[in-house]
Amino acid sequence: MLKIYKSFFKRNITPVSFDQYVPKVELKEYLKINDAIYEVDSKAENGMTFSRLLNCQYSDTLKKMDPDHLVALVTEVIPNYSCLVFCPTKKNCENVAEMICKFLSKEYLKHREKEKHEVIKNLKNISNGNLCPILKRTIPFGVAYHHSGLTSDERRLLEEAYSMGALCLFTCTSTLAAGVNLPARRVILRAPYVAKEFLRRSQYKQMIGRAGRAGIDSVGESILILQEKDKQQVSELISRPLENCYSHLVQEFTKGIQTLFLSLIGLKIATNLDDICHFMGGTLFGVQQKILLKEKSLREITVEWLSYLTEKGLLQKDVVDKSKEEIEYSFHITKLGRASFKGTIDLAYCDILYRDLKKGLEGLVLESLLHLIYLTTPYDMASQCVPDWMIYFRQFSQLSPAEQNVAVLLGVSENFIGKKASGQAIKKKVDKDIVNRLYLSFVLYTLLKETNIWSVSEKFNMPRGYIQSLLAGAASFSSCVLHFCEELEEFWVYRALLVELTKKLTYCVKAELIPLMEVTGVLEGRAKQLYNAGYKSLMHLANANPEVLIRTVDHLSRRQAKQIVSSAKMLLHEKAEALQEEVEELLRLPSDFPSIEASSTELA
Image 1 (cartoon, one colour):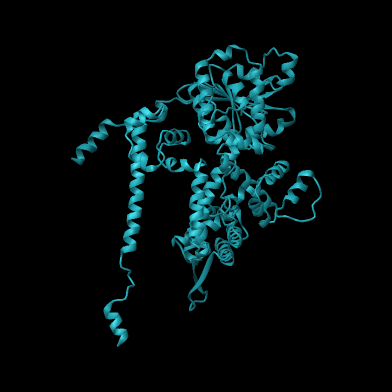
Image 2 (cartoon, helix red, strand yellow; image 1 turned 30 degrees about the vertical axis):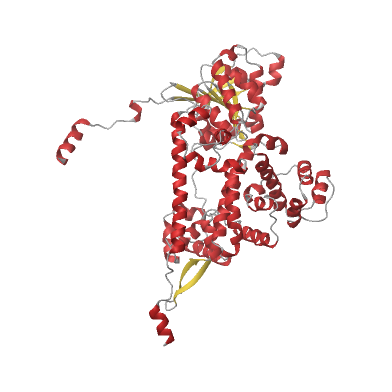
């Protein structure tokens, strides 16, 4: 039978390439200097050849508002084809989107009008009736900005609208090039910069690689706008090869080599020096070691970092064999090391976290969640935070005495913040990281009370996308801290508290909605509908009739209703099984229970 199959496949199946179905899309690269457009040509002496002059009739007002002729460049393509305009900063994205819409004709409003109206409606629905005023003005023209300041739901909706053609132009930051597959007929680079840094070759290729839709367009175009002062650097940019790829295992040592060693020993993959060195030899760093660190051997680097982890109290060294000339050691993970490993805590912060949790035990304030939220605010986000001192002072003054006591315990007083807000000189030194982390704790604390990203965004003058990232980071870090505490007996008091806090941070809704949010397919809006319809617990949903749910809850399909009931039953069953196991464990005879024979022997 096997022979028959083999002969059949040999006769009937021939290898096919992807190109047979989807032809390659030609990508044309252009540079724009003043009014002239040049095509990138590797054969030309200076790497480019003249293509055309940009023919546009600009008024004096438009010349002032749009010196780079963006309106002329995008209107050659939209609305029939899509276009991406990469901008150096988030604020520039918003400004460019608004500027372009000011000079587009009213005809653009008629293109896919119903679909654009639906996009605005959906954006309001996911944001509890809120809508960014810039998007409100630009979406009717088929234009939107796209950057990390948007919430994930907003980005998803805008990306879908762009993919379907309802939106034809995105003004975006470089992050869109790396993560999201949103191709366009034309890609325009507003400047050869990302923030203040000049473009790298890999970034440039990533951005222009968005141009051309395989299977839709036959050609794609990229236009890099540059000034005369950048001409030499851009000439090098378009001609140089891509940057080499190097290992960052040692450069990012707390997230790289230290975490790797802790994981190897914690998982018992490699526990002695020879095995760890052998493992390192198979990594990219091991292959490139002679290029990256010529002055040290791979073994010396391994010994150095193992010694560092041992000194830090994360590993312990044991002697295996003293008889040999070079004493053999093995390594095992300490309690602190296991806690850091199980909690996936960045090793740059594990000792700081331990110290903060230890200090928290001396006077944990439980009258509100603020103290716990501070302990679970991500360290890395605090280091990047720049507080608005007037907002800080206003929020601090609104805290209750118990909540202000949390700040005082951390060494931050109302007087200190007041002086910072008024620009007065301060003699007393306060740890900047603590101050910044407390500020982010205020943001999270306010968010958990109000459960509305838009109002908190306005209150703290922060992008709503950043606040959502902060919330997601805090929920993740809270879970990590919980696992960290589970491995250290001295922190038993935090365990139950962190379980509840992690849930609150994960769902960020009013407490009564959290049990409903645990069900697959139930988001905040649906949870509110179910709660208002009388389904206030997991048991209510598990025992619900899908047909009754359809009639009771608006816009709920039969498939969704069945999925909600099924998921609730499964969750309830899992919780019942967990409780049953706990009961059996309590009723089971202990393994070390003294037997009658043992008792009589002892008496004798």
